[in-house]
Length: 263
Image (cartoon, rainbow, N blue to C red; front, side, top):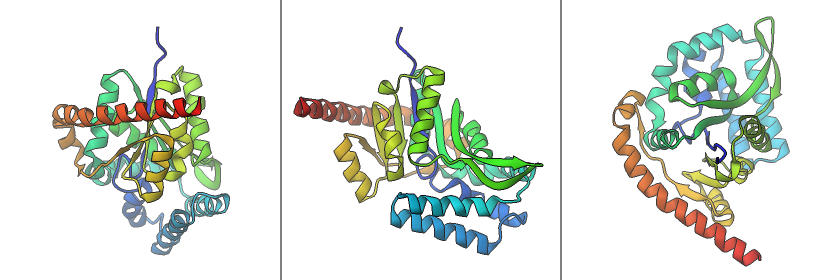
């Protein structure tokens, strides 16, 4: 009997057309968790990371910004805000094409795993909203019901790939027949950990990496209200996977060519 496999999806800019933390910035501001200055500092740290690349210095800068931002937040308050506003701020920004892929993988018996650098308190309810079977996220230390600012696990770069391998070992997933999707070059380790990697809406650097590694290239263009997308999913799924089948065939052919050249 064949081992089960899975489909691992990055969240921000892959499944949803924005970042999950940015999506909740307005209700967090409204409830006094985030000031405008906090939001600007966090956005600036993310900008420096994006333009500076995923080296250790830039990763540390972004991690420190996240740590300072959440320090002292009450966990119950964060969870309540997310629960109350998730339909308002996440429903409208889900990519229709991503949802079609999620449903198709599930129809083919694969677990869908959301993998995100955002905190678990954001990722878990979004994963539930999408109907995903598993999720991986950053984890923050909690004492007396509040975040200390210490990040115990940062789901970024190689850490994401390591978490994927650990979950695969735990759940018995065959990674050689599993899939991964991401819009970010920082997720190269995760894409390399599975048999079928796909980049989503890639920039020039990520397109080059995709060509070098034999990954498929997908373009998601249509954010749609989740309830509306669910109502029309069967037709969308058929169209999406006709196109994806062509891409997978090309990925397999490129992988075979690389093996022949390497032998």
